[in-house]
Length: 361
Image: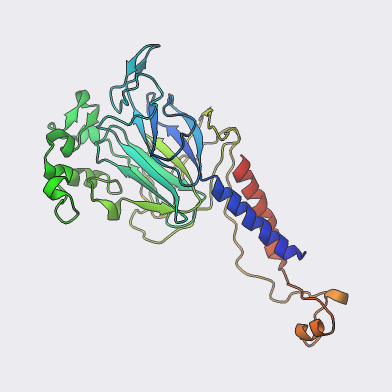
């Protein structure tokens, strides 16, 4: 079989295998306190090995989700659990324990929402529709497309109006939750994009966190897409990047990191020791947690910008006729040969190696 065809076939199979695994979700806690993330899979989606867990300060944990998975993540704060019962100050799911067991967050809570692999694209957003309790960002790595970072790095609890403030200032309600009015909840006669408009409260949220959902019909500026990426969800992210958030140029994310200790059940917890950052172009959010993790690796993206301008066709049975008439050679009993540039062979080998590491790490 032709070597070039073999490499292309291998790369295609590896890409298919990579897609079958869906995405890795890495949770990072940069808060100065423990956070208890909650995970709620939508109907028809499997659990990711946990429905809630403890995430100490300066630690991370990774899970793997299959293609088509959809659900939401959030952070709980001020949790106290015993053998029999327990609760959290914000984001409580009512289970009485670290595992939420299929229950969602009690508002107010900052939510990260995902749908993987729909039409080849992942859809994701950070929502303040149910209020706010923690700064949170979502970053995509290793994917193609816009793959923008999104979330809210501002501490809205400090800017929260008194009429929305709850839990002694530990969280900020949405206007819907606070007042229950149809115009704030986009319900009843206001149940459409045309009739439900931003309120003074949702505009306050949007001003502080322009990439997050501020009310139910805030889709155009709040939903993001990426293909073939892994995602990092960071609580209390560091300072914003100096890069502009207004650059509309699509970017291809080619730098990523994987956790070699992660299994499909996602039970690895790793403590970070340093913090450096880098963001995708076109985002003002802190891109970033490139903290060295046990067994992790990252590197520059690969690209082939050209091919040999004057290929060496060789001699003997693999030689092209001097006049270039390869069809005449076939007519005389020769076989069709496909020229495969050495650069493509090298790129195929390196890409195959990187894909294998990405899939099985």
